[in-house]
Length: 114
Image (cartoon, rainbow, N blue to C red; front, top):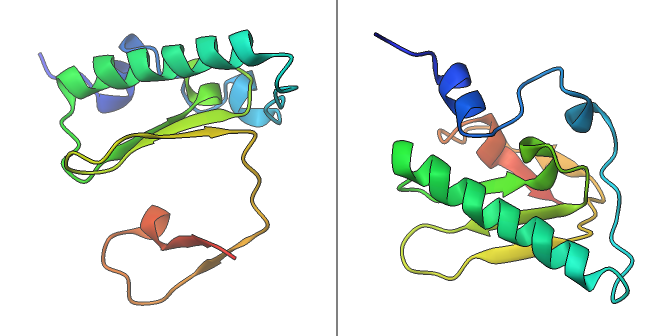
């Protein structure tokens, strides 16, 4: 039986398009007061990455944000390719992005912080 990748990701705990946590702004952590909450969110992100990695090997690295696993907080983890350590982002802010032409890696890879 062939399972759609969206269903497979849902089964692994990844929220799908249309979910409220994806439509709402993620709530920032009040650090250091909410350190325990931030650590729990990061632990949940690493656990989700482990589950997903068992099914989908991401040779070029992977990243996931808390809203993608149903946690409406401003946290994300990026695991670069190879043996580089993971990058933990708490309360990240984007000032904008641009799209560069001619990048064969795909639209997501063309987003660049400005």
